Amino acid sequence: MAEDHYFSADPAAPFEREPFTCEVWGRELRLVSGSGVFSRGHLDHATAVLFRETEPPAPGRILDLGCGYGVIGLAIAAAVPSASVTAVDVNERALLLARENAATLGVADRFTAARPDQVSAEATFDEIWSNPPIRIGKQALHELLLTWLPRLAPSGRAVMVVGKNLGADSLQRWLGEQGWPTERIASAKGFRVLETRRG
Image (cartoon, rainbow, N blue to C red; front, side, top):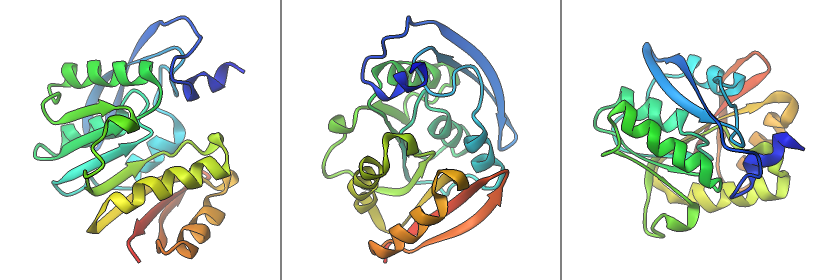
């Protein structure tokens, strides 16, 4: 299944870069995506909804969880000059593209793209932003969220976009049951934007 290549650390698809431009929070971002990476050549619908329904976060330490070629973290770094962004993904090709995009946008000094095991165990974050990889399966997704949500600073929050037909409402309930109160802050085009805070 070609669409599943981006879940692997080293996608099998031949590597072809594909540039595109998108507008986020009033800024034009020139990005390069590629084969074997999620949402090649365009801004995916879920992330577009996330941007449209939110404002950039306050300055601080931001985590882009499941970053792909980095669009969420890069948009934050571009919009919030004093933000420090850590972007994590298991796909090495995606991380390479994210680093290249950061350099092109001039934010490489405040944007770090890394595998999860390369992030310091002591690192904490003021906000987590994510279009989470729902298709890795419910158990893997739950493990992912329960690994990273505890990294939030005491007053921190997570902002996620999830498709209604991919279980956004049940995920919202489950997070609450795990002690992570979660509110729906927007709903558009079949997607929910969820905000999670410490219980």
